[in-house]
Image (cartoon, rainbow, N blue to C red; front, side):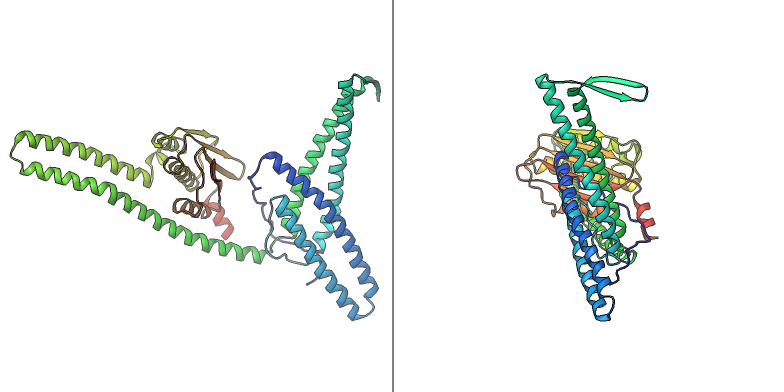
Length: 419
């Protein structure tokens, strides 16, 4: 293993941050991660200095150089692994894999920047809290004193209480923004320096495509079996009943009885058509192509059997495969809530950003949904085939939240990734 800085020639996009937890919990995790980063940064700076001194001292003989190199390789591998664990635990970012180098460049950059940035963040928070505490305290006690502010050509006199409060709020806000920027910078630095190399990324991509291709085949087979069950248990049974009614009417001798049988056969034929229409709608709703996702979800809400609220936050129609996946995720989640969870209400929220489309379905049922069950596992395979992610949060007692995040450009992204 070499001690040259790690470089990746192919930029990799940052993964979507984890959605789990409240904003306060996510902020607490990031603050903890920054504090841990300050500690590990000092350790990394100390290690790099010790390693450099050893190289200088032991450079006179080959055995010493080998020992120093081995010490540096083991130490840097351990510190890079420690940084990965910190990023995954507190920032929700997993670089994964084996880096394309020893890590000296990454450790030097991260230790210098991370320590300095974390120090600025916590210093700003500390000073801001001091200003806020003093300013609010003076406002409440009424002990504010005049403070003279002099600027070029301007002289102001203000009370110390409001001034300290404003200074404290401004410093806290700037420190929060600086901390968020530090988290983003650490993620990007890890993505470019400590993530998998181009060959490793390609190997993972091929493995992922192999798995998702197999998943798509299983999902298609599962869908065919479901259609067969619907036809056998519904349409076929009604067709048999209709045939029996018509047969009895054909051989009947009493005109009144025959007329009654024909009426029953007519009613049964209407039910058969409704059943057949439901099966066709469950396979693929025509409204999805003709009227779009909003209208198709409105149809699902009308048929759900429980109150369903749809909040549609998409500015324009997604590409066809993404629209279809979003529709089936929402339909399956609503059906599960109505049939199995005993829900009294379902909320469907569709949102988007620059890169992704997200659908989140929440119900107030009893919870306990199994992500490995047939319906949800089939949806996961469909979503994974489009480079998306499906999350199921269903504690016992509820509520259940199912979230699917999909790329806006759908299959085009996969084609570009494979090119």
